[in-house]
Structures are given as structure tokens and as C-alpha cells.
Length: 348
Image (tube, rainbow, N blue to C red; front, side, top):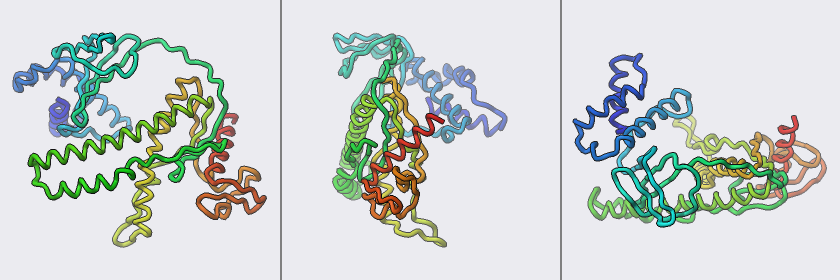
């Protein structure tokens, strides 16, 4: 339905450049499309309407420069549908009622409280998931923790200004060899054959496992930090700029391309942005605050005397100020500077 509506919108725009997206106009076409495509009648009408709502949101994000122009969805990729109402829940029996589908069993991962607003069913790697959005009143507690600065890195995933640090998981690096082996095997299979499809599903399952390992690590780390600290200062890292390719062009080829490629892969494997996103909302849940601090010179500035210079950091791991002689682990120095900059921003 999303693709059908997007194609219709593109056709109308080609005929008239002043034509604007209208949910009402496209929703009025649903009865006609149901006659043309009989199988659409098997689907609940509100599910189709929610798909059009998603397209409306995609256009809004595009015009507000938050996302690219809406693209057609590929079959089998991020398949999901949403019910805005009509669902019933029996937690004691682990049952969920979906309109036009009936009662289905589900594995209850947590207690669901509040009024059900919508239910989303999704499918990934042969497994079905259900997300239940509810509305309820929640009293934000008063956080009793202190403040902390966080320095993000590759050798150390996160270093705190109190000296504590978290080792990186490197989920992709762990399964990189196994993934490469499966991809080599895939090249030798006849495309779209049964063996090719089985191997394709196996690769997708491994990617899913990598994503789950990374997500679990990020949730555990962000939960621990947010529960123990009320005011958190973190580097405002521009990951897209940091992970740009060093390949260059024919006229101006890049330098140390292989090393930069490995660094880019390591940076993306850390998922710094996702970690910051989780830390942000979890800190708010706990009654705390998260402040993003400019990352410029945080690893070159002496937290003792304030001297700034690249010569302060002779090695990747050690920091030694050439002015006052202060020595400390470079990541701890970065976290201390983030803490100092964050305090200056808050009290400015």
C-alpha cells in the first residue's frame, strides 16, 4: 500500500508540479484500489490507513529536512503493520487479539500497564514481534546521583571522568570471519535457488544476531550510567564526518586508505549515536539530564593547567602536559575535559 500510494503521488506530481501530498485524497482512493487488488480486502482497513499515515509522516520529514525523499519499500525488508484500535490483551494468558486475525499467543517480556494506543506487528529473520504502545501517568523521580563526563572511543567504548571505563563489545568484529565465510559460499550458489535462499537467510540471521548483541550491550551500559548519575555530559560527536572514506579521487587519491577503512568500521561498530540516544531518554526517565559538549580539543587540553596542544598527547593512550607535567590516561583526560566544558555550559 505504501508503494502504491507513493507511485500515485509521484505520477500526480509529474503531471502537475504544484500538486501536494494529501492524506485525505489518497485515503479516498482505497475503495477503488480494493476493487483492483482483491487481496487488499483481506487486510483490515485501518492497517491500510496507517500505512498511508506513515507515508504522510515520511513526506513531512522530507519537507522539514529531517530525512530524504520517501523511497519504495523492498519486499521482505522491515515488514510491519499497525493497528490503531480494536486490539485486546490478556496478559495472564499471554494472548493478544488482533482485528481480522483473532487471538494469537505471544511471549510476555514485561508487564504492560496503561491504556493501549496502538499495536505494531513486525517480522525479522523469520521471527514475529509485537510492540504495544500504551499511555499512562508516570511521576518523574528526583535523581540523587552526581555528575559525570563521558569520553567515547574505540579502544575503550566509554571512559568516565571518575576513571571507570567500559570495554567495547565489537560485535561485528567478533563475527566478521564467519560472515565473510558465508558470503563467499553464497557467491558459489545459483542465484534464487533453494540453497541460495537458505544461505541468504543464514546470513540475515547472523546480521540479526550481531545487531542484538550490540543492542543488548548498549542497553546494559546506558542503563548503568543513567541510574548512577543525575547530570551526564557527553561528547557531541559527528559520527558521519568521522567515518567518511579516505579513498579520495583519481586526481587526489587518499592516504592510508586501508587503515582509515578499518578505523571507520570500528567507529560504526560502536554505535555511539544509538548509545547517546538511549542514554538521553533513560536519563530523563530517572529524573536526570544529558548535555552534549563540543568535542574539539577535549583530548589535547590539560585539565590541570588548561594548556592546549597536540604535543600533550605523545601516544594514543597516555597524556602528559608539556607545561605542568600532569600525566593521566588520555581517555580519562578527555572525560575530565568533557565534564569541565559541560559544567561551563550549564552554569553559563
